[in-house]
Image (cartoon, rainbow, N blue to C red):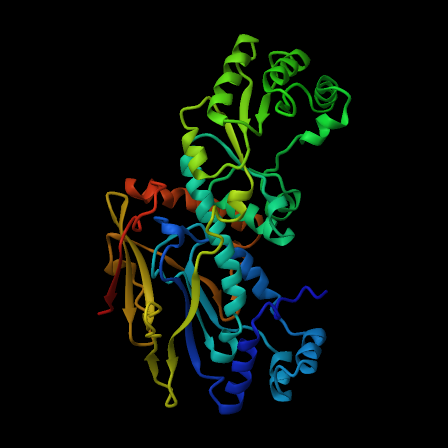
Length: 441
Protein backbone atom coordinates (compact mmCIF):
# COMPACT_ATOMS: atom_id res chain seq x y z
CA UNK A 1 0.00 0.00 0.00
CA UNK A 2 1.33 3.42 -0.93
CA UNK A 3 2.61 5.72 1.81
CA UNK A 4 1.29 8.68 -0.18
CA UNK A 5 -1.66 10.49 1.39
CA UNK A 6 -3.32 12.13 -1.63
CA UNK A 7 -6.28 9.74 -1.63
CA UNK A 8 -7.04 10.52 2.00
CA UNK A 9 -9.56 12.68 0.22
CA UNK A 10 -13.30 12.71 -0.41
CA UNK A 11 -14.28 12.20 -4.01
CA UNK A 12 -16.05 15.55 -4.32
CA UNK A 13 -12.77 17.38 -3.83
CA UNK A 14 -11.49 15.75 -7.03
CA UNK A 15 -14.70 16.36 -8.97
CA UNK A 16 -14.66 20.04 -7.96
CA UNK A 17 -11.05 20.26 -9.10
CA UNK A 18 -11.93 18.61 -12.41
CA UNK A 19 -14.75 21.09 -13.04
CA UNK A 20 -12.63 24.08 -11.99
CA UNK A 21 -9.88 23.11 -14.42
CA UNK A 22 -12.50 22.93 -17.15
CA UNK A 23 -14.14 26.31 -16.43
CA UNK A 24 -10.93 28.26 -15.70
CA UNK A 25 -11.44 28.96 -12.00
CA UNK A 26 -8.86 26.47 -10.72
CA UNK A 27 -6.09 29.08 -10.60
CA UNK A 28 -8.04 31.65 -8.61
CA UNK A 29 -6.28 32.43 -5.36
CA UNK A 30 -8.36 31.40 -2.37
CA UNK A 31 -8.27 31.42 1.41
CA UNK A 32 -9.80 28.47 3.24
CA UNK A 33 -10.26 28.40 7.00
CA UNK A 34 -10.60 25.62 9.58
CA UNK A 35 -12.79 26.52 12.55
CA UNK A 36 -15.41 25.09 14.90
CA UNK A 37 -18.81 26.75 15.13
CA UNK A 38 -19.22 25.53 18.69
CA UNK A 39 -17.40 23.47 21.31
CA UNK A 40 -18.60 19.88 21.15
CA UNK A 41 -20.08 18.32 24.24
CA UNK A 42 -20.60 21.60 26.06
CA UNK A 43 -16.88 21.85 26.81
CA UNK A 44 -15.53 25.19 27.97
CA UNK A 45 -12.46 25.16 25.74
CA UNK A 46 -10.87 23.09 23.01
CA UNK A 47 -7.26 22.04 22.47
CA UNK A 48 -5.65 22.16 19.03
CA UNK A 49 -3.82 18.91 18.29
CA UNK A 50 -2.65 17.10 15.18
CA UNK A 51 -0.91 20.03 13.48
CA UNK A 52 2.50 18.37 13.37
CA UNK A 53 0.97 15.16 12.01
CA UNK A 54 -0.93 17.10 9.38
CA UNK A 55 2.23 18.81 8.15
CA UNK A 56 4.03 15.47 7.81
CA UNK A 57 1.07 14.02 5.91
CA UNK A 58 1.03 17.08 3.65
CA UNK A 59 4.62 16.35 2.68
CA UNK A 60 3.44 12.98 1.33
CA UNK A 61 0.37 14.40 -0.42
CA UNK A 62 1.36 13.20 -3.87
CA UNK A 63 -0.36 11.38 -6.71
CA UNK A 64 1.78 8.49 -7.92
CA UNK A 65 1.08 5.93 -10.62
CA UNK A 66 -1.09 3.82 -8.31
CA UNK A 67 -3.32 6.72 -7.32
CA UNK A 68 -3.60 8.06 -10.85
CA UNK A 69 -4.46 4.62 -12.21
CA UNK A 70 -7.23 4.26 -9.63
CA UNK A 71 -8.70 7.67 -10.48
CA UNK A 72 -8.60 6.85 -14.17
CA UNK A 73 -10.12 3.38 -13.80
CA UNK A 74 -12.89 4.69 -11.54
CA UNK A 75 -13.53 7.61 -13.94
CA UNK A 76 -13.30 10.10 -11.10
CA UNK A 77 -11.64 12.81 -13.22
CA UNK A 78 -10.70 13.43 -16.82
CA UNK A 79 -7.35 13.09 -18.58
CA UNK A 80 -6.34 16.74 -18.19
CA UNK A 81 -6.97 16.59 -14.44
CA UNK A 82 -4.88 13.44 -14.18
CA UNK A 83 -2.05 15.34 -15.85
CA UNK A 84 -2.44 18.16 -13.32
CA UNK A 85 -2.46 15.75 -10.37
CA UNK A 86 0.67 13.96 -11.57
CA UNK A 87 2.64 17.13 -10.81
CA UNK A 88 0.64 18.22 -7.75
CA UNK A 89 2.54 19.94 -4.97
CA UNK A 90 1.06 22.32 -2.44
CA UNK A 91 2.97 25.56 -2.98
CA UNK A 92 0.75 27.83 -0.92
CA UNK A 93 0.86 29.15 2.62
CA UNK A 94 -0.67 27.81 5.83
CA UNK A 95 -0.81 29.69 9.10
CA UNK A 96 -2.66 28.78 12.23
CA UNK A 97 -2.80 28.23 15.95
CA UNK A 98 0.20 26.56 17.54
CA UNK A 99 -0.32 22.92 18.37
CA UNK A 100 -1.39 22.67 22.00
CA UNK A 101 -3.13 26.07 21.85
CA UNK A 102 -6.64 26.52 23.25
CA UNK A 103 -9.44 27.39 20.85
CA UNK A 104 -13.04 28.62 21.13
CA UNK A 105 -16.09 28.91 18.85
CA UNK A 106 -15.10 30.72 15.66
CA UNK A 107 -11.36 30.54 16.28
CA UNK A 108 -9.60 30.55 12.87
CA UNK A 109 -7.52 27.52 13.79
CA UNK A 110 -5.97 27.08 10.37
CA UNK A 111 -5.79 29.36 7.31
CA UNK A 112 -4.84 27.80 3.98
CA UNK A 113 -4.00 30.10 1.08
CA UNK A 114 -3.30 28.91 -2.43
CA UNK A 115 -5.02 28.36 -5.72
CA UNK A 116 -8.43 26.74 -5.52
CA UNK A 117 -6.94 23.67 -7.17
CA UNK A 118 -4.21 23.34 -4.55
CA UNK A 119 -6.22 24.15 -1.45
CA UNK A 120 -9.54 22.43 -2.07
CA UNK A 121 -7.85 19.01 -2.04
CA UNK A 122 -6.67 19.38 1.56
CA UNK A 123 -10.09 19.56 3.23
CA UNK A 124 -10.53 15.92 4.22
CA UNK A 125 -6.93 15.40 5.27
CA UNK A 126 -6.93 18.51 7.47
CA UNK A 127 -10.27 17.77 9.08
CA UNK A 128 -9.68 14.07 9.66
CA UNK A 129 -6.46 14.83 11.53
CA UNK A 130 -7.53 17.92 13.46
CA UNK A 131 -11.02 16.70 14.38
CA UNK A 132 -9.75 13.44 15.84
CA UNK A 133 -6.63 14.68 17.57
CA UNK A 134 -8.25 17.82 18.96
CA UNK A 135 -11.15 15.81 20.41
CA UNK A 136 -8.71 13.49 22.17
CA UNK A 137 -6.55 16.38 23.37
CA UNK A 138 -9.56 18.28 24.72
CA UNK A 139 -10.72 15.24 26.69
CA UNK A 140 -7.18 14.61 27.90
CA UNK A 141 -6.79 18.21 29.08
CA UNK A 142 -9.95 17.93 31.13
CA UNK A 143 -8.64 14.73 32.70
CA UNK A 144 -5.30 16.36 33.37
CA UNK A 145 -7.03 19.26 35.12
CA UNK A 146 -9.11 16.83 37.20
CA UNK A 147 -6.00 14.82 38.13
CA UNK A 148 -4.07 17.83 39.37
CA UNK A 149 -0.51 16.86 40.28
CA UNK A 150 -1.19 13.12 40.02
CA UNK A 151 0.30 11.53 36.89
CA UNK A 152 -1.83 10.15 34.06
CA UNK A 153 -0.97 7.35 31.65
CA UNK A 154 -2.73 6.73 28.33
CA UNK A 155 -3.50 3.04 27.80
CA UNK A 156 -6.31 2.95 25.24
CA UNK A 157 -4.68 1.43 22.16
CA UNK A 158 -6.89 -1.66 22.34
CA UNK A 159 -9.96 0.54 22.07
CA UNK A 160 -8.97 2.34 18.86
CA UNK A 161 -7.83 1.63 15.32
CA UNK A 162 -4.11 0.93 15.09
CA UNK A 163 -3.25 4.31 13.54
CA UNK A 164 -5.80 6.19 15.65
CA UNK A 165 -4.16 4.68 18.72
CA UNK A 166 -0.83 6.31 17.87
CA UNK A 167 -2.48 9.65 17.15
CA UNK A 168 -4.46 9.47 20.40
CA UNK A 169 -1.35 8.72 22.46
CA UNK A 170 0.35 11.74 20.90
CA UNK A 171 -2.63 14.06 21.48
CA UNK A 172 -3.07 12.92 25.10
CA UNK A 173 0.60 13.54 25.84
CA UNK A 174 0.42 17.05 24.38
CA UNK A 175 -2.59 17.78 26.61
CA UNK A 176 -1.02 16.71 29.90
CA UNK A 177 -0.73 12.92 30.09
CA UNK A 178 2.71 11.78 31.16
CA UNK A 179 3.09 8.41 29.45
CA UNK A 180 1.55 5.92 27.04
CA UNK A 181 1.40 2.14 26.91
CA UNK A 182 1.86 2.24 23.11
CA UNK A 183 5.45 1.47 22.13
CA UNK A 184 5.05 2.69 18.55
CA UNK A 185 3.95 6.08 19.89
CA UNK A 186 7.00 6.09 22.13
CA UNK A 187 9.29 5.35 19.20
CA UNK A 188 7.71 7.81 16.78
CA UNK A 189 6.93 10.71 19.09
CA UNK A 190 9.37 10.37 21.99
CA UNK A 191 6.58 9.82 24.54
CA UNK A 192 7.57 8.00 27.76
CA UNK A 193 6.13 4.48 27.85
CA UNK A 194 4.84 2.42 30.77
CA UNK A 195 3.32 -0.97 31.55
CA UNK A 196 4.05 -4.15 33.50
CA UNK A 197 1.53 -7.01 33.44
CA UNK A 198 -2.11 -7.86 32.75
CA UNK A 199 -4.47 -10.29 34.47
CA UNK A 200 -3.37 -12.98 32.02
CA UNK A 201 0.06 -12.95 33.69
CA UNK A 202 -1.47 -13.90 37.03
CA UNK A 203 -3.78 -16.46 35.42
CA UNK A 204 -0.84 -18.05 33.62
CA UNK A 205 0.68 -19.17 36.93
CA UNK A 206 -0.60 -21.75 39.34
CA UNK A 207 -0.87 -19.18 42.11
CA UNK A 208 -0.94 -15.43 42.43
CA UNK A 209 2.18 -15.60 44.57
CA UNK A 210 4.11 -17.40 41.83
CA UNK A 211 3.10 -14.71 39.33
CA UNK A 212 4.19 -11.93 41.68
CA UNK A 213 7.52 -13.62 42.49
CA UNK A 214 8.28 -14.07 38.81
CA UNK A 215 7.44 -10.44 38.02
CA UNK A 216 9.54 -9.13 40.89
CA UNK A 217 12.43 -11.36 39.82
CA UNK A 218 12.23 -9.91 36.31
CA UNK A 219 11.49 -6.25 37.08
CA UNK A 220 12.62 -5.74 40.66
CA UNK A 221 10.66 -4.81 43.80
CA UNK A 222 9.97 -1.34 42.40
CA UNK A 223 7.50 -2.82 39.91
CA UNK A 224 3.72 -2.38 40.11
CA UNK A 225 1.71 -5.52 40.86
CA UNK A 226 -1.87 -5.99 39.69
CA UNK A 227 -3.71 -7.07 42.83
CA UNK A 228 -7.36 -7.52 41.79
CA UNK A 229 -7.29 -10.74 39.75
CA UNK A 230 -8.86 -12.67 42.63
CA UNK A 231 -9.31 -11.04 46.04
CA UNK A 232 -7.87 -7.55 46.53
CA UNK A 233 -6.90 -7.72 50.25
CA UNK A 234 -5.26 -11.10 49.72
CA UNK A 235 -3.52 -9.78 46.62
CA UNK A 236 -2.12 -6.80 48.54
CA UNK A 237 -0.87 -9.00 51.37
CA UNK A 238 0.75 -11.37 48.89
CA UNK A 239 2.35 -8.50 46.97
CA UNK A 240 3.99 -7.05 50.08
CA UNK A 241 5.10 -10.47 51.30
CA UNK A 242 6.78 -11.15 47.96
CA UNK A 243 8.29 -7.74 47.20
CA UNK A 244 8.73 -6.45 50.73
CA UNK A 245 7.80 -3.01 52.10
CA UNK A 246 9.70 -1.34 49.24
CA UNK A 247 7.15 -2.56 46.70
CA UNK A 248 6.87 0.18 44.08
CA UNK A 249 3.14 0.06 43.48
CA UNK A 250 -0.11 -1.83 43.21
CA UNK A 251 -2.70 -1.42 40.48
CA UNK A 252 -6.45 -1.70 40.99
CA UNK A 253 -8.62 -2.31 37.94
CA UNK A 254 -12.05 -3.05 39.42
CA UNK A 255 -14.48 -2.34 42.23
CA UNK A 256 -15.80 0.82 43.85
CA UNK A 257 -12.53 2.69 43.45
CA UNK A 258 -12.87 5.32 46.22
CA UNK A 259 -13.74 2.63 48.77
CA UNK A 260 -11.23 0.10 47.51
CA UNK A 261 -8.41 2.66 47.30
CA UNK A 262 -8.96 3.68 50.92
CA UNK A 263 -8.96 0.05 52.06
CA UNK A 264 -5.81 -0.75 50.08
CA UNK A 265 -3.99 2.30 51.43
CA UNK A 266 -4.85 1.32 55.00
CA UNK A 267 -3.73 -2.24 54.42
CA UNK A 268 -0.46 -1.21 52.76
CA UNK A 269 0.34 1.11 55.66
CA UNK A 270 -0.47 -1.62 58.20
CA UNK A 271 1.95 -3.92 56.35
CA UNK A 272 4.71 -1.31 56.45
CA UNK A 273 4.52 -0.48 52.73
CA UNK A 274 3.89 3.18 53.41
CA UNK A 275 5.63 4.37 50.23
CA UNK A 276 3.93 1.90 47.89
CA UNK A 277 1.92 3.83 45.30
CA UNK A 278 -1.64 3.06 44.25
CA UNK A 279 -2.54 3.26 40.57
CA UNK A 280 -6.17 2.90 39.49
CA UNK A 281 -7.47 2.13 36.02
CA UNK A 282 -10.96 0.66 35.35
CA UNK A 283 -12.87 2.78 32.79
CA UNK A 284 -11.85 6.17 34.12
CA UNK A 285 -12.93 9.48 32.63
CA UNK A 286 -12.57 13.05 33.84
CA UNK A 287 -15.58 12.75 36.14
CA UNK A 288 -14.34 9.53 37.75
CA UNK A 289 -10.91 11.09 38.20
CA UNK A 290 -12.44 14.16 39.84
CA UNK A 291 -14.44 11.90 42.16
CA UNK A 292 -11.18 10.32 43.31
CA UNK A 293 -9.54 13.64 44.22
CA UNK A 294 -9.90 13.00 47.96
CA UNK A 295 -8.95 9.33 47.73
CA UNK A 296 -5.44 7.99 48.46
CA UNK A 297 -4.68 7.43 44.78
CA UNK A 298 -1.24 8.22 43.37
CA UNK A 299 -1.72 7.77 39.61
CA UNK A 300 -4.33 7.04 36.97
CA UNK A 301 -4.39 4.94 33.83
CA UNK A 302 -7.03 5.90 31.26
CA UNK A 303 -8.02 3.86 28.23
CA UNK A 304 -11.30 3.93 26.33
CA UNK A 305 -12.44 7.36 27.45
CA UNK A 306 -9.39 9.32 26.36
CA UNK A 307 -8.92 7.70 22.93
CA UNK A 308 -12.60 8.26 22.10
CA UNK A 309 -12.72 11.87 23.27
CA UNK A 310 -14.65 10.96 26.44
CA UNK A 311 -17.95 10.75 24.62
CA UNK A 312 -17.11 13.47 22.08
CA UNK A 313 -15.09 11.71 19.38
CA UNK A 314 -14.86 14.68 17.00
CA UNK A 315 -14.11 18.36 17.50
CA UNK A 316 -16.69 19.40 14.90
CA UNK A 317 -14.29 21.53 12.86
CA UNK A 318 -15.15 22.56 9.30
CA UNK A 319 -13.13 23.71 6.28
CA UNK A 320 -14.68 26.70 4.51
CA UNK A 321 -13.75 29.11 1.75
CA UNK A 322 -13.68 32.64 3.25
CA UNK A 323 -11.98 34.75 0.55
CA UNK A 324 -11.18 34.42 -3.14
CA UNK A 325 -10.13 36.36 -6.20
CA UNK A 326 -12.85 37.36 -8.63
CA UNK A 327 -12.64 37.24 -12.40
CA UNK A 328 -10.78 40.58 -12.42
CA UNK A 329 -8.20 39.47 -9.86
CA UNK A 330 -9.67 41.49 -6.99
CA UNK A 331 -10.24 39.91 -3.58
CA UNK A 332 -13.73 39.36 -2.19
CA UNK A 333 -14.92 37.89 1.09
CA UNK A 334 -17.28 34.94 0.83
CA UNK A 335 -19.33 33.16 3.47
CA UNK A 336 -21.93 30.46 3.86
CA UNK A 337 -25.28 31.84 5.10
CA UNK A 338 -27.23 28.64 5.79
CA UNK A 339 -29.33 28.62 8.94
CA UNK A 340 -27.30 27.41 11.96
CA UNK A 341 -24.29 26.88 9.69
CA UNK A 342 -23.29 30.41 8.77
CA UNK A 343 -19.62 31.29 8.52
CA UNK A 344 -17.75 34.59 8.73
CA UNK A 345 -16.03 35.61 5.51
CA UNK A 346 -12.75 37.42 5.12
CA UNK A 347 -9.17 37.00 6.24
CA UNK A 348 -8.75 36.93 9.99
CA UNK A 349 -6.16 37.65 12.61
CA UNK A 350 -6.62 36.05 16.02
CA UNK A 351 -5.65 37.32 19.46
CA UNK A 352 -6.19 36.16 23.03
CA UNK A 353 -6.94 39.21 25.16
CA UNK A 354 -5.51 39.03 28.67
CA UNK A 355 -6.06 40.81 31.96
CA UNK A 356 -3.24 40.28 34.46
CA UNK A 357 -2.37 37.02 32.69
CA UNK A 358 -5.92 35.65 32.59
CA UNK A 359 -7.71 35.20 29.27
CA UNK A 360 -10.72 37.47 28.80
CA UNK A 361 -11.74 36.95 25.17
CA UNK A 362 -10.92 35.45 21.79
CA UNK A 363 -10.54 38.50 19.56
CA UNK A 364 -10.97 37.81 15.83
CA UNK A 365 -10.08 40.76 13.58
CA UNK A 366 -11.68 40.40 10.13
CA UNK A 367 -10.33 42.07 7.00
CA UNK A 368 -12.29 42.42 3.77
CA UNK A 369 -9.10 43.00 1.82
CA UNK A 370 -6.31 40.63 0.88
CA UNK A 371 -3.80 41.85 3.42
CA UNK A 372 -4.31 40.27 6.82
CA UNK A 373 -4.10 42.57 9.84
CA UNK A 374 -1.84 40.71 12.24
CA UNK A 375 -0.03 43.47 14.06
CA UNK A 376 0.22 42.53 17.73
CA UNK A 377 1.31 46.09 18.50
CA UNK A 378 -2.23 47.24 17.72
CA UNK A 379 -3.50 44.91 20.44
CA UNK A 380 -1.03 45.40 23.31
CA UNK A 381 -3.20 43.61 25.86
CA UNK A 382 -3.48 40.51 23.68
CA UNK A 383 -1.40 37.57 22.56
CA UNK A 384 -1.19 36.81 18.83
CA UNK A 385 -2.35 33.29 17.98
CA UNK A 386 -1.37 32.70 14.35
CA UNK A 387 2.07 31.40 13.41
CA UNK A 388 3.42 30.38 9.96
CA UNK A 389 3.28 26.62 9.35
CA UNK A 390 3.86 26.40 5.59
CA UNK A 391 5.39 29.23 3.57
CA UNK A 392 5.55 28.90 -0.21
CA UNK A 393 5.05 25.17 0.12
CA UNK A 394 7.92 24.80 2.62
CA UNK A 395 6.84 23.08 5.85
CA UNK A 396 8.03 24.27 9.25
CA UNK A 397 9.92 21.16 10.31
CA UNK A 398 10.11 22.36 13.91
CA UNK A 399 6.44 21.41 14.30
CA UNK A 400 7.08 17.78 13.34
CA UNK A 401 8.46 14.72 15.12
CA UNK A 402 9.34 14.33 18.81
CA UNK A 403 10.64 17.90 19.05
CA UNK A 404 7.34 19.25 17.74
CA UNK A 405 5.41 17.14 20.26
CA UNK A 406 7.56 18.39 23.14
CA UNK A 407 7.08 21.99 22.04
CA UNK A 408 3.32 21.55 21.71
CA UNK A 409 3.08 19.97 25.17
CA UNK A 410 5.03 22.79 26.78
CA UNK A 411 2.94 25.39 24.98
CA UNK A 412 -0.32 23.75 26.04
CA UNK A 413 0.61 23.53 29.71
CA UNK A 414 1.69 27.17 29.61
CA UNK A 415 -1.42 28.62 27.93
CA UNK A 416 -3.77 26.48 30.00
CA UNK A 417 -2.69 28.60 32.94
CA UNK A 418 -4.42 31.55 31.23
CA UNK A 419 -7.87 29.97 31.63
CA UNK A 420 -10.17 31.74 34.07
CA UNK A 421 -11.33 29.59 36.99
CA UNK A 422 -14.70 28.90 35.35
CA UNK A 423 -12.84 27.32 32.44
CA UNK A 424 -11.56 24.54 34.70
CA UNK A 425 -15.03 23.21 35.54
CA UNK A 426 -16.07 19.88 34.02
CA UNK A 427 -19.81 20.56 33.78
CA UNK A 428 -21.46 21.51 30.49
CA UNK A 429 -21.61 25.26 30.08
CA UNK A 430 -20.76 28.22 27.89
CA UNK A 431 -17.17 28.67 26.63
CA UNK A 432 -14.72 29.92 29.25
CA UNK A 433 -14.25 33.17 27.32
CA UNK A 434 -16.37 34.86 24.64
CA UNK A 435 -15.37 35.11 20.99
CA UNK A 436 -15.44 38.71 19.81
CA UNK A 437 -15.33 39.64 16.10
CA UNK A 438 -14.06 43.07 15.09
CA UNK A 439 -13.44 44.72 11.73
CA UNK A 440 -9.91 45.65 10.81
CA UNK A 441 -9.28 49.33 10.67
